[in-house]
Image 1 (cartoon, helix red, strand yellow):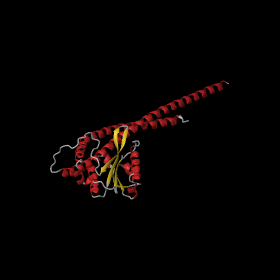
Image 2 (cartoon, helix red, strand yellow):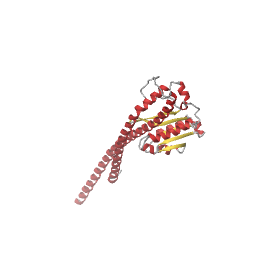
Image 3 (cartoon, one colour):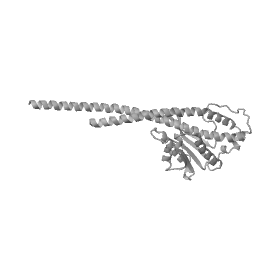
Image 4 (cartoon, helix red, strand yellow):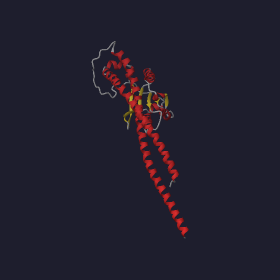
Length: 293
């Protein structure tokens, strides 16, 4: 049984941990609100562009003439993996790592064996866990701390150029999408070739009557790269929001656990203190009885 000093030290340690987890919960809640605000501002613009692209995708001439719609045998495959830079967010990162392993060894086992499966890692945790088993063609850690469209634009532009030059045949994005503070959903999005223009938008208008200047083909050549860059940026913001939600939930659970541990430790402390006082009284009474005799 622990003595009083040991119990006091454990109580102080748990109280210190509780303060840290509680503070981290509040910080994550604040960052989550900012991330949700960024996504809500981006979504209407993104959905409108995707609606236009969806309508235009029904034209066979436009699809056949655009290299970004070209479906080839996936000989060279790239997985864009988005994790976080930090831990303490539950299974947020481990779920993504497991999903990458599963896809690499099941769906793209041939490409992996031929060393034609490469990764683009956004987030420190992705690099730490995946660089041992996979070839990483590009890694970025600072983008999560300071997300900006210019940096995403550079990454997307390089991938688009490699795809059009047939250096890459298929690109898939793997990340956690934000559902609510307690739920993050592993999301796989076909990035290239362009398979489906509709990206979780509620609008379903088709065959809208557009007037193009100078032509639909030129318009699509400008529109599709912009949508793809926006898609990657949206996935990044979604993953950041999911990270803060996961960390907020994990820290809330840790704080609750600390409270329960403190209750148990305080009960043990009171019982030990009572036992110590009882023993001291028994010793005093025993000593007094000895003196009488």
